Image (cartoon, rainbow over all chains, first blue to last red):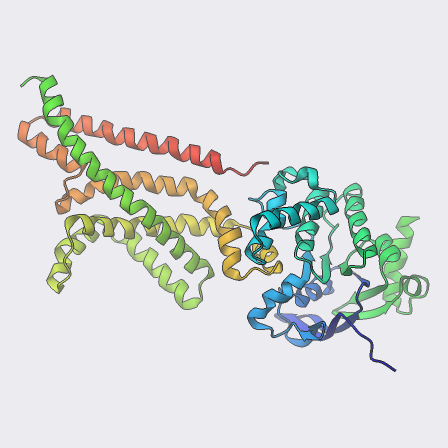
Amino acid sequence: MTEEKYILRVENIKKAFGTNQVLQGVSVNVRKGETVCFIGPSGTGKSTLLRCINQLTIPDSGKIFLNDEEVTHAGPRINYFRQKIGMVFQNFFLFDHLTAVRNVEIALLKVKKLPPKEAREKALYELRQVGMADWADHYPAELSGGQAQRVSIARALAMDPEIMLFDEPTSALDPELTREVLEVMKKLALQGMTMLVVTHEMGFACSVANKICFMEHGHIKEEGSPAELLNNPEFERCKAFIGEFREYSQ
Amino acid sequence: MDQITFILDVMVPAFESGLLMTLALVAVTAPIGLLIGIGVACGRVYGGKGLSWLMQLYAIFFRGCPLLLLLFILYFGLPSIGIVFTPFVASVLGFIFCNSAYNSEYIRGSIISIKEGQLIAAKALGMTRNQAIINIVLPQALRRSIPGISNEFIYLIKYSSLAYMITVIELTGASKLIATKYFAYNETFFAVALVYLALVTITTFGASALEKKFAIPG
């Protein structure tokens, strides 16, 4: 039996904020090209888990490996790993003083040190990928939430990441805008991007995810394929959570 | 001597050399004061405990010390311990301390008004903290500081007249000399006040043009 090859390994991550133990030992393994969705009630550590993966939040204990290289305790090398780990935030966090295309190219210029012309071409290419090329010269405040989120996806993709983290990418958007962002994400997944997605969009999770993890109280309480989890949740709380989604979507 | 001759032959040449000195004081002080102000502000917001505390001390001291007293110390006091500055250098030093201390507060306020997400997103892209501060936070914070910094610039134009107290013959000093010599206090001081008013007005318009130029659309 050969050992399975994982692009990302999260081993027993624990994190407390004060007395609040947000992550109580979370482990998850992700294969290349997989989409893993994290669902569950608010405040159960889903976002904290994503932030631990690129060390925006430093876990108290546990280890994280990207391609068998340790991300935790990487020191200054963390900036190398962060280029490999793209991240998209609930509130976009576009750089307010830069146009869409400048948002995408700034890290190419400053971090990857690409020549200006090359950076601009790459940035425009990524904007085209998310359907935002026509808005290249607009500032974030001139964009709708959905447009802003697509630019932020382009910004992350421009670094040629190996995996992408999505932290509730559509929670600040209305249903129509949510759709346009999910379309982009679905396309990405189909292109073979490895994605970890914290979401409340059950429809997306069911149709795109290879694996869904239900989290509660800082644990992954249940994990499995969408079919396993939706049709046959073993865990009571997970059953109730999914049940509520069912009820409202009928 | 009639009024016209007084204005043309006495006032204009005196004001001209005085004005040049005032402009020199301002031109040397303002950019250095701004740079140090940015440094002090960053030190306070992003520095470790020690640096942050040191920068706070800087701001407290130089905002707390009356500027005239500071100039007296620099020019009259320090020579007794062997440090001698020319009047111009002593003035500029005093102005830089004062200007940078106030600027640091305006800039610090702007920095902490920038949402943390900007820094987080920059880090997530692989920028170091310094890259994120320089490329993302400061360009936004400095835009928000323009009104404060130009306010301080206007103060600087006016308090540069204190250099006269340590023998730098700038605009106020030049006017005082001819006012006393010709017993023409009202005309002279009123005229020099108009010159300051003109400088301040130009600055005000310049500042709002700058604000417009750097305004973020949307």
